[in-house]
Image (cartoon, rainbow, N blue to C red; front, top):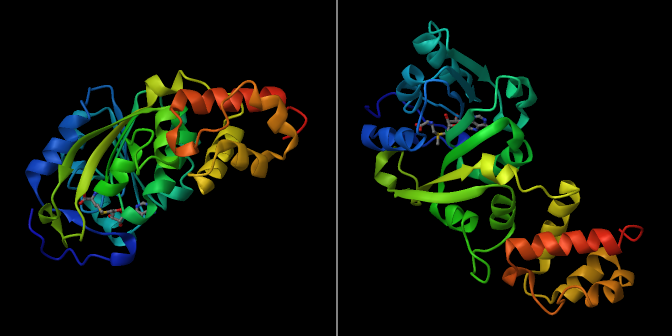
Length: 270
Ligand code: SAM
């Protein structure tokens, strides 16, 4: 793959993969099966696309850059299994591909500026998907797989680990991209099927609670909860949950328990 005529646009986070070995390694990690449906976010010049296409039942790409989309269609459009949407993935209606079946796998070497939004969008719509594999900034990857008590533990870790099972697979040097990004990357895989079994009642409320609590990650829960839900709830909560803990130290199970208790005792207060 030659970095010739790529004319990357910084505003679209275009750092193209120019190393076949890394492209193959990422695709290998998808464990593709002939019945798989793949949704690729930002295929670009098709570094991953060309390896994926012959191996799957159906390929769906979502690329925002019109020129690149055009080029991809010219190259692969003749294949019946290839479908491309020239669109912003963040505005792409996932329900339209939801009926295709449960084995949809997502893959993307995505623009770093939209990483959190992509993760939240897919987690919210995880019922359509089997797995998601993204190449993201290494620091962000560490935030996704972080454990309680560590500096990187926050919203990304709690939401990823409540609703999925994320694993960091390997790191990727800036040298395999054109142009070279300033940071090291990492490939992370979210197992969405297993995570989906663990249901949380009133998911939107749970997500809101996590976001609110992490605004004051070092404060005692008592204070943050009082601030979020009012003082009235504290008395009934205090004998059911240790409110001296801090959000950054709670395990995923403890966040779930806390939410369940808040819902029970605060039905008319929140
Ligand atoms: N997958 C290619 C590769 O590995 O070489 C390209 C990777 S490049 C980091 C990110 C790609 O995402 C670019 O092709 C860019 O045009 C596209 N892109 C940027 N923002 C997007 C968005 N909101 N929705 C879909 N694609 C987007």
